[in-house]
Length: 362
Ligand SMILES: Cc1cc2nc3c(=O)[nH]c(=O)nc-3n(C[C@H](O)[C@H](O)[C@H](O)COP(=O)(O)O)c2cc1C
Image (cartoon, rainbow, N blue to C red; front, side):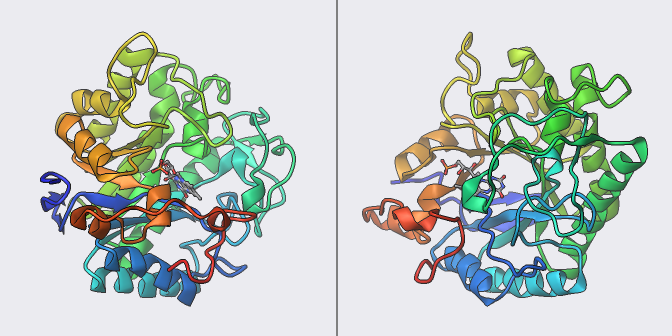
């Protein structure tokens, strides 16, 4: 019934039993000091028990400076945080799935940070939109300070250090750099958020440079054999409708540059993965990724709620699919799809009033 979805595959040297992955989802359920505990271990393992071939974690903050984005967000910096993730990663693997750590720097979208009272970003431009209430935020985002060259170098090093801890200490199969959804790397890529006149702003290549340098630094640190991916999007948590200003031609350039920088996979996310990425053309962002980065694995995400939509996307333009809210509603989504069982709708209390993991959810 779903021949592609349930065909085993690989990324780099890592084998997946199928092509259904859990999308990264922040659940602000770590301790105040960012340590994942027993609830998170059971929560993440339940997706593996439910048949997912891989699990991408929520975004983990990467330093004790400006990267933390939300209260109760987990980090991968301290020994306690790493030890907590070692338990989570082992539980997911034991249940038969691949486990990937997503690494995030919140930049100007940071709503809460135990380590700093201020925020930083490419330029001193207040982000659009409002802080997210379901992550305990309220009101406008703070006005960030423009990052110095030194702060940019430190952020790049923090990505590399955290990737090293994730792979070599915590036991993750790989890492995903969060270059999407409005966070620091995407802020640099975004025309209206990045007004720099140095080599970190301006042209498409210069705006993408931070993402590319992070990829190169991480690859240098974890080696050719560890799995490394990047997530990229047009829309942002604080600006859903945003479109890349250079259109299709720019998108093809972006994907080519990401491939050249050395990622094993590119994870594209859109509101509906199959829809045209730009209004003046028909190709989806996944199709453009496939065309611009033909030697790189493509993961598609966005609205792939049932087996048919997922299978169609795999037939069209993607090697893997990442399932978000439908996975929260069905930790056993792959088993249900495979057995032709009905999928449950997402219960209202899962993400409301706050997005914490609730008892009985796993
Ligand atoms: C509660 C929640 C938390 C999320 N947190 C993250 C995150 O930490 N990192 C990330 O890249 N995307 C995050 N996302 C976005 C999802 O990965 C995904 O792109 C989005 O839900 C759309 O996919 P879907 O239609 O399958 O739900 C989050 C989404 C939700 C609903």
